[in-house]
Length: 485
Image (cartoon, rainbow, N blue to C red; front, side):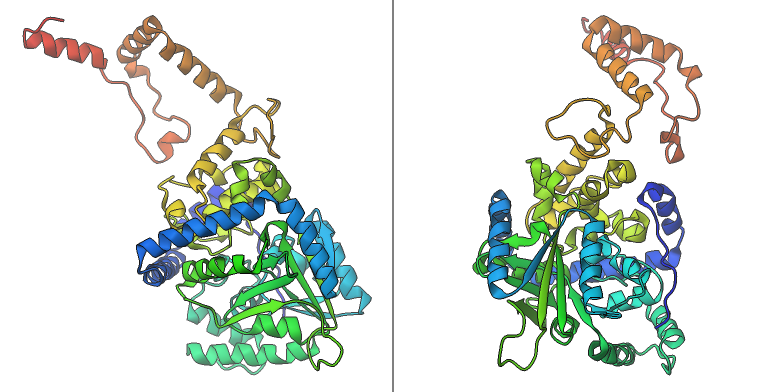
């Protein structure tokens, strides 16, 4: 497969990206159809509202219990995995993770890595890091395979190519897969993609996958998938590398069952996925298949910052189902690329500021109507709107103001003029005489109101004071009725 330069859409350009997306009628049509489909599927997967409420409460409790002892569970996970023959690596930053993985591939003189779906590998830009060093990283999840072929980034964490039409995919396969005929038949396209990937599994030196749940007590890496590519990546090559964020650890195997049920039903409306892989170590003596080496890379990349703050820690409860994105009125209109981050939509708006800082994500916490739909469908009850408000406050907080848990990029959207305006507003409203004088002056000088009022008039008519204050109107009304003042 030929490669193309990947088009990045930095989060700093979110507003420009959003305008471009909103003007793309084809994109909006694709997103609307896909989001409606996924919302209907989720609704049908939870016919019993009492059972859903109970399951969400259980899922929230499990995630919060596991996060409350995360440092201890991570140490237990490492010990259990080591006992099983898995080598554990710790990465504080994306560069650390890339260097570790490159070193492992290089040690086997590897030239081809075949990948199962892993958003953390997208987070660290692994494909491009390896490509720059002469190693091909081939995506095997069909959605990831398509967006890699198109030279794009995933636009959805569960369905990476959800913005593509079958005509788009037919053209891509016909252009990039040798001998592939042009066809818009979906089954035929899937067969073409799978046949093209089949040989890659056999030739790959290394397989890489993500992890949905890492069980501390048993040292088991759980991988949820529908296509079978995850199992191929983790069993056919001689080396399997798994990569995940540090928050994915759970205490016991029994914790996985309700989280798995919440994940698949919330994500794609399935009671269970086709494959549920439980990886507990490399091939043992006498076994005829499986990898000879298994490695796990545990990535921090800002998660410790979220963990240190009691409110922000709830961000780490996420099980990556994508339901908040499917129900978000902003995401469903602009898609994932506009956000410019690995994790788009509501979960990306609260997670990305920890991963790359508020400096680069200052607009994301405001990319929400605060309608609350994301919190209503979150399977582990993350209070996303509350956290968006907190991030807006941190973004506006003066950069040098001391706080208990300062966030990277604190004060990124701080404006001295705006801060002065709010202070003045507070003083006016704290004094009866000042408030009356302000109201009287504003109503008499309303003709001087500017027609352009910063960002407000981009989408609204200018704000203009009324000709009379409310108190004046009430007094006039009472006088006209003859009532005493």
